[in-house]
Length: 546
Image (cartoon, rainbow, N blue to C red; front, side, top):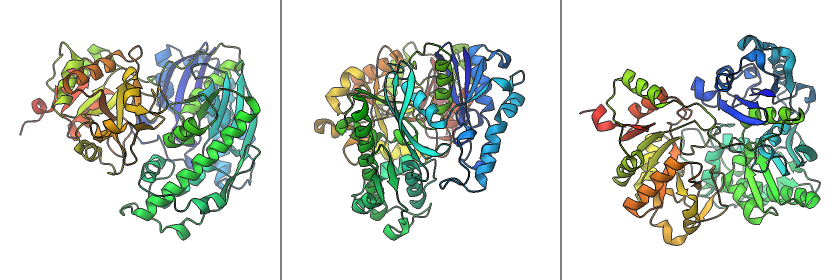
């Protein structure tokens, strides 16, 4: 069965293609439009479909729109309850209208598509499928979904057996852990539905001195759900303006909410496990991108294995909707092959881009060694290799790399990217070396957990150690990422350090670099020393002369 998955109704519009139960391609619209998150999550933007991403997915699969068997849309307007608290009042009618019109609008964008093959998949079911059906053991084990909201709920917990979901718990609006965290994000002067990860980073600088107040307002209800009372944020901490400096109060409030989120997450997981006894948990929804909470659950929760969808936010529902429909049709679902599901270019195409840009470049005999030499000299490297990542994390395909032993590289990279200085940068490490440096869930190929850095390593790799002594680790398996593995081995041979700094290849407010033009523009506009693009390298000193 050939299924095109579509996410469009809230934010992070995306498309995914599943053929005969296998994931062929998945991409977010922002990587094509160059508009962060694709669009803002307003009801009046729900008409904006991931047209470019959908066209690319079909081209990648060699499929014409008329050859599709189904289009799976990750929102079911029939489940919306008009007037429900937590909806956006009159605007909700517009969102529902656009969702109902989506078949005709997508058919207009993809000529030849039959609107009659459209299938609406409940938003949280799509999230659940994106995790449990894409996991290494597809369709077996428990699943937990937490986000801002779907049609009328903000949470789903359930279990999969033989690829079929049984829902065991769900929390109705207006109660929402995701919306609470969004409210906090806005109160702290960041962009809601966008910058929640900044709040998570800021929390490490604070003390949870408002924890008791948050426990009074936010409670697990003992039946698999939770209650979120109205939080008067201003009575706790004065709001921060977007251009204001953060202070201790802001960090303490962030730490308090982060702690309460972790506590409620543990309660929900404990309730679910008590009904199933499963050893596996898969997670999705925007809350599942909170790697600090994920690590608390891994350490203190009841599950032996936790797998988090790397595109856990709404972008991942495009894939989940497609997998759900394919599974319902009887296709045998296979595990997601990795997060590198986006666009790529062959060597000849990359050379053509470089020739067109008229930049000098060369093709070293050993790319990994050449880049390791640059990193060992404390140069910053833009790394553009293979297929782009699906989801918000740079995982060794569209990355900025640097030396972890220079403590100034945290400030240096944050300045290159134009982002806040309290933001941490992450380490890449070979899977077989990870346990010697880091304590936490392993393997960790998608940067979705934090790990305690062993004390004897903290002074050796200070650039990647957060203020609380942790690091958000990406482990690299040689079988999956041979080139990155060669780079890490070459860097260790030169420096004695088995870690390389890895952060996303972009600047603040811009989506992650996706195509060669994006890479060249980023290289040209930021103080990056070397661009490794496919087998070629471009050196800043040869392009820009004083």
